[in-house]
Length: 605
Image: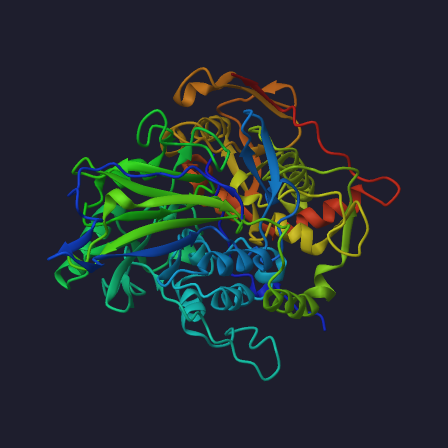
């Protein structure tokens, strides 16, 4: 399931402030290259200086404003042990990421830090409440050199993205701290394949060149071409998104003409390794055999002029070699998400050819462990912003009796998905609120788990506003629309067909809707149409049903064209308000909410 299909509206009008541990598989490339490319030169019996230097490339992706360590299963990585067992290792948090990167840089004369997009957007309250200014500030302190844009950089539109790059206080909410103006990112955001419809030019720099002591490495940044399908229409208004391969190849040629022979592509699109363990060897039994998904075809199409690919979007961890168009292996990496891992890649730079010696490229993912010292500058940054957020963030919304898994669930139906869909149905079922009889929630919009253990001083089992916001950070407005039974069935089939066939997006459904998902079949047949029931009755193709969903789904987002065909639309409150109202109505300290059974979809494997 795609990890990142989840839109966000501009939340400004509705937001008010009240007052290394673990080493991954090392990939060594075996392309046919000159045998002496990494040798030290010798002449007349005298030792000559090396013609190569090693450049350290540190990279990460999909931070999503997670400055504090992510809670619950969202804050762990899977690690395969020597005996084959898999353990969960707590990881992430920008205080530890800063320490990890600073330690890793020690002893390296040449070190550059790059990111694969989605640094912001879908962020927890600490960052999201302030339009992600805290995250940009943290990335500046981390000494990030460059990042690609991801789809979430467009959640609030191109104008807000430009503000994050260039600085200036928010146009509606102004400056958050007295006497302090937001400075913007001191690293370039690259958007090579995103152009303005008016000018036809990239909206931000397409590439940048990192230089030190004559060493030059070009970085080209792109987001996935399908960004408009997974971001609200307002976020991509006036923009065009172009093919990733064509764009990277175009600018690789341009850099090459400028004499920049060493090139890294930062691509916000990714793949799915055969194992969720970060230290899985995805070059086994052969190069790239253990990875699938869009990034494989992209890697195979990108010019051999590009020496390595830093990727993202799928929130997976992998270090793989995928053959370039000339058949030579090339490193393709991703460091999971939320700052839980970082990738350390060695690029051996030939001072004579000014190119990377591909046979010498090595790479590994490392855990951002929480048993190391915290970076004190990050601790201070978090405390400063938490103080501003506290009046809203700490307010209790409801109570739960145990963890209710969303992002951390391993099944197509998420317990937290059921809870959210039920909240949406209840909030929009009254005739004057829309008259909904069923509700759908997109899985990618559920960004975290609800965790029983206290995150601060609120006490175990208490769900605070900040925790609820972290689960649903987009503040999408709810819609109720008319759909025919035939359109309802089509929407359920679109979960596993069309653009969602390779990576299914299973809608979370409200109580009363049941069906069988047969994963032994292919395409639309995986949703067994004859089993679909609403309150025990078969869906009537000709009957009209009132359906509740967020505005992203109602716009046909995530490949659900059938949901975009709704008529007689009524706009309701925000998804977060509906969720918080449900928590308040259905839980108390003495009668907390229990995790739903998640038994509405019968899965056949």
